[in-house]
Image (cartoon, rainbow, N blue to C red):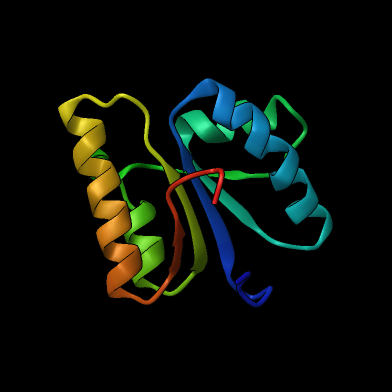
Amino acid sequence: KLPSKDKAILFAVGPTETKETLAQHAKTLNNLGYKLYGTEGTAKHFQSRGVEIEALSKPSSNKHPNIKDALSDGKIGFVFNIPDSMNRVDESDGYVIRRTAVDFGVSLLTNEKS
């Protein structure tokens, strides 16, 4: 279920081919009036495809505001978190993003085929 338009949608996507697929959907969400956030890599990829998206730092970066802050503050209403073959830091960031989304009742999608 999509959030109300006063809540943003977060994209934290690992695989490049998945970024390609989801960039098209992100553009549609832009056209529907949603604010979009993404991890730095996802935001850069989406921006190169014409998507309006703001980059947020991963929780492990210790920069603020970051994704965990935005989730905790109620700014995000839906999370696309599609992991890649991960290293330990990416695995931990993904876990923190998913755990925080669940803790704050934010809808979460972890597979682009869902």
